[in-house]
Length: 147
Image (cartoon, rainbow, N blue to C red; front, side, top):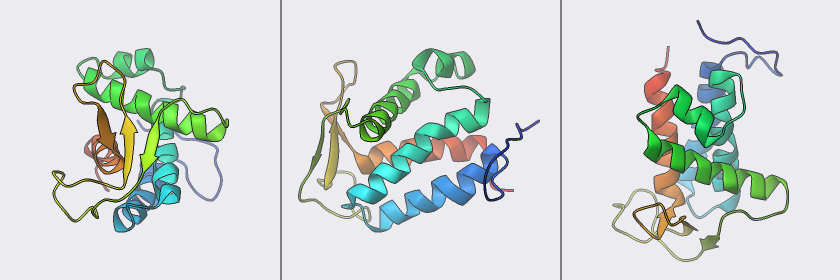
């Protein structure tokens, strides 16, 4: 049974939050993937989706309790949390860069304008905001199919 939340503006379930907040913001980012504003807002929302889904704060440990076979996703959500909290609290916890790059319509083989350096436990030195957000949003869309 989905958790019901006391919230503002008729957002009451995780599915509401996903399809009324996360997905539209992600689509705004895809349409303008050089926009730091769209990227940061999408990351803030997708990171907080865990709280909507499970009624508790995200940590890698809490994530792995819910999804024990998804350690790669735990790392991606932790990266999103570091960006989110660094943005909210004026204390960068992830190294990001903005520069030239191709739109989201191009293959992932092309350079993207917004990138994040990854921690040593990742199998790559950096990840684009495009890839990070696509993987995180897809994770939730699989778990909460549109009604």
